[in-house]
Length: 561
Image 1: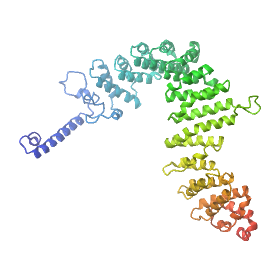
Image 2 (image 1 turned 180 degrees about the vertical axis):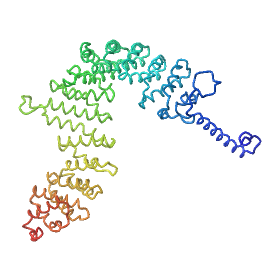
Image 3 (image 1 turned 120 degrees about the vertical axis):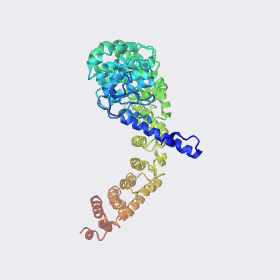
């Protein structure tokens, strides 16, 4: 083996390559054997010639070689290796590592030690015994380590309140750090301790943070106010934070304003949310282009709660919101539609109002709104995910009921695609029936007829019901009722698809009640249909039709008998 591994010089090239490969495999095997032969031993069993108390790199419980996380082999540095099952005495070994934390110079090794502690905490292992050592580790300039220490402190604050009070002075001190990220993280951790006795330590850093020069610290302070409110409402009321939050709605940073809106809405939830007036509303809407998508939704949610003083103010708000319809965010578009409809309902003329005759009515304004938002909605329907498309289809369904006829010319958008999800197909077929008019009814009925024999049983039933709905509402124009009735009669003979023949019989029974003139079209196939239809609802519908068409069916009594 030694000759093969080390005596490769002087060999032919091919033999030298084979020897090199063997050399590599051999060393990996020896290293693997060496690692596993020490598994399970304590640190005291290592060779006595090591005078340092530091654990052996790569040994059990010790820090791995540089760049390799704890618990992982030197050949793979995956993050999930931090979450391996712990061995007995591992927490004590971590304590020894943390005690030498201040003298460790390798930044990555320090982070690996902290990651191991956080991993144990995440797995539910009680590492609160390391609280003192973790407190000492907080004095560092490494933001990653500081963030993990803050996470450790917040996690054990509620279960170990006495230990949490030990870190108060350190957190308060960090709230005045020169680095805004450290100030924000320290303030967030201080407010996340959620201990009633911490109120006196939290109030002053909170007030300072609201006037900080960095937006991250200010928006963290705003969220800290909400935590303080839930912790002690009496002290919160004495501090008059509500007025401060209203003043901060004029903050130059949009993320701070967004947090102020959310906090005010939650604090004043019992009274319906934050108080609104013309100045606040117009100020927020004039700045709406500065907000993130989440911030835009927070502002738009306020609009339906605000009632414009007159028509001009309502139209001014609509003009300010109109650019939002051009965004790619479906949530913002839908929230804008809701805002438009609420304004139309507030400023539109109602019967009995003593306004000018030229003033638009509520229905007229709503139709104008639906016409304006039709194009953005149709665009989003064609470009969204399946979940988003389904939600938008439900909105379109409601808008069609609110203002019939506006979406009729876009009926092809609602044709079923082969790659559509099942629930989307069902929604589209139901909407198609509402879009039928004398111009597009033949195309829609033909499309529905293609879906009747679909492998999805529910799809076939909905297609038959939609065809019957067009005839029931007489929305297909002259001759549409008789044409649809003939299609349904043909479906009665589809013995191989029993659910379709049964659904067709049920639809014909409803259609005969609405249009008695089609009795002559329906009567012929009823005697034989009664023999083949097996579903109780379909059979009952055929029996009803036999009674209605009995004058024209000679064998009706015998079939019933």
